[in-house]
Image (cartoon, rainbow, N blue to C red):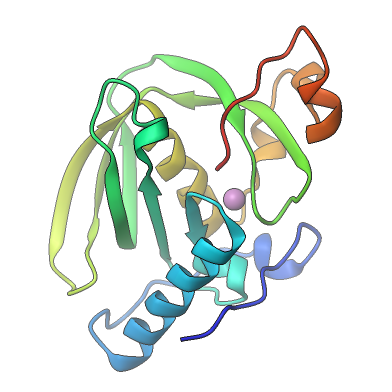
Length: 179
Ligand code: NI
């Protein structure tokens, strides 16, 4: 396994539309997954998309730690290949997000509260899952990466976008999320 270099905002791989993964269950894909898992653990995030490690393919990994599960259950590290998402309601909420490709910054990003995820797992098997809350937020953030979209382009309120140190000492802001 290896810790991979994470692309930062401004690199063209982060604004490209990633290509579908033709064959999921290959040694190359399994190695990439293992390397992404190690990279995510090293970097300390909760999600990582392949374009963030300079691989322009449609896959990401994520998990929901117990500390962020709210009323729900924690979600173990999950591999998502060739995903499609659809909103299950019109409800949208803002909450704090960060991105390993935009270090030092965070923002309150509007996202759908409920989505349906259809994708393939690490063995290539198709699955569909209805997601809510923080898990739905992570998946929308990672899915955006596959289409070359970074969270700043989702913002509607730039008063809640800034450097971590400034936001943490701003009494009107109460960030808690790291994506
Ligand atoms: Ni990100």
